[in-house]
Length: 273
Length: 350
Image 1 (cartoon, rainbow over the protein chains, first blue to last red):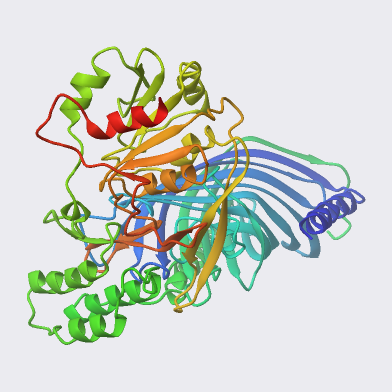
Image 2 (cartoon, helix red, strand yellow):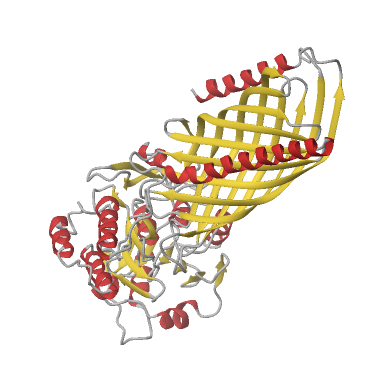
């Protein structure tokens, strides 16, 4: 089942990529580096109703290239610090997030200064690692996996200088696991399958549909000129791997990006203009 | 006029950007809509939170050795909770629940006041270890160590005929290569003494790593029952098989020295080792602590830990209250010229 789904994802990307190369107009390539601030919140009902919230720092880098469709690949991280909302002096949590991703967006509608793209995004690796000060077995908390999302981009040119990209991603399925089960620091599915042992550390992943793991992302990018991009990102993940005990994690960031490489090359005139 | 129009356009874009930012900020609070509200921290709320955790997550309500009456504990403690109860009295009430469970892995702590309540496994027996006797009569100064700490010390006794390993904790990290090196130095011995008295545990993966170097084949050792849901019977069962290490395997007789302070991961080591026919335990009853644990904070910051799994060995024994040794030997604390438990182990090997 896993192999078939991965094959399906691979074929989908190849097909969409191939389709995009049939009608070239403008070729754009950019490489940007990003820095910014984030604020995050977390709640795991398996262990407590208390919200953990805090702030952090976001470094990222990404490559984007566009012929007709847009391809993007990047790595994004954040290092944050959260505290519980109902008590103080304990439970300080360091939060490390990391994401390696690839996406393809295919143009579906083009009108004057607006363009709508639809496509898919693959979070090749999506990790949320939390280290909670003062706990023992539950101190290290890892949520990890590979996500496949439907992805869209609404692009609007405001004038010669400004452009807005509003992106929305909705996860369809994932191969992931929450490293904390109902009552032990091991994946729930691993325990339910009766496969836990003390021979070696086990970090398995399991197929998880969106109704067991809701994962949404929105990105607003405000591009200024050829070099600068100001962005707002919001990610929300909610898993239901233990029935009745959902885990919710939210993450917002405001970032500034600088395109250290930005090349645009016109091949032919766009038919729609 | 032209300048004015340009200003209007710039303003329009600024409004657009601000509008989009506001929409974005709206999303920030959106995740809160997916979350349950923060809990209350009044006395009843804290009591209910702790009782829910114990009721749903504690794995040994059904352990026949503990003879627990869940409803009696709940009704007795719940009746004590009032809003004018002091924080110390509330802590004391929750501590009563902790002590009823008779489980050294289950405790409650107010870390800021540095107060912890836990079941005292030491109170049930003498220590049966005099470290000064072990140091001066047996280990002396010509021992070797492995690992990053002095937790493990080893040497040979009786003119090289008996290997002696002292391991007082499984908290350090050891590698298969280090264990290979130690066991290779015992290649001419007739047997090995593994002295794990007062070993309070640590990492069960390390306990398993050592045990694998004594297994010449796969051994079924028992099953661990993990709590996987809130219901009384919501357990999963992982059947645990000990597999041989890929390096040096020591298959001659092994005497494991135990006392009441053998606990937690040390219990894992013992249940892994005692499935092998060449292994015997000598000394006193162990402390138990067979379950794996989870921990967390209550909404007022009190730190809890409890057993959320239980190990049942291949013979169906619940190990949480400890197990008796194969050969029962008591230490004579008045005679400091020797350690009777080590002497009996040497006698068994030779």
